[in-house]
Image (cartoon, rainbow, N blue to C red):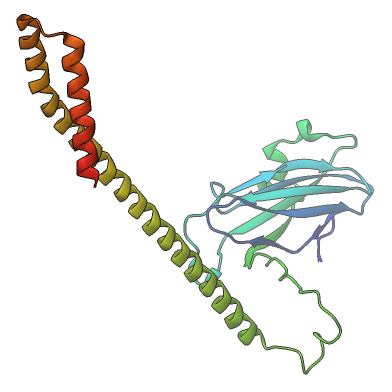
Length: 242
């Protein structure tokens, strides 16, 4: 704990769990152990990078005040994860019953004869907390030394199982795709065959139509000609099938 006469500050440094492209916050607690109203002000060497709430205020006697410092998202990590930014917390005795509205910049001006106390705080980057690894549940035999498997061996076995499963699924998918393509190809051939047969029937019916028109002019019953034509088409179709 860093201690000055008017305010106690905890912690003594600003620790940020650094992560790229993410806003990160940390807290400070100011404790007033005196019987005076104490006004404070927080400054930083890099004001565009940090947001301090509140950056000014009054700590009542025998009370505390929490400050939140937020670092804006960073696009690049600093070299060796070292930060040269600094914070300065200034404190001064305020008049009894003072509030934040009563704070003026002149109160923290040493040249005006005010007794201003200062505490410097440095910024430290720490690694973000890692999520806990899952623990497998098993019997006592599984947890015995004889049944235990090294982490590397277990990891390799999981990777092998996953790879085998993916390979099998890919093979099944390829087989299904091949069967689907074969079925579509057969359907396409049958459709083309039916279209071709339809064309042939149309070509074979055309002479019969002409003959029917000619027979109508000659007096031969039209239904007789149509019946003969249909019988001829059926016989021709059956002969082609055999």
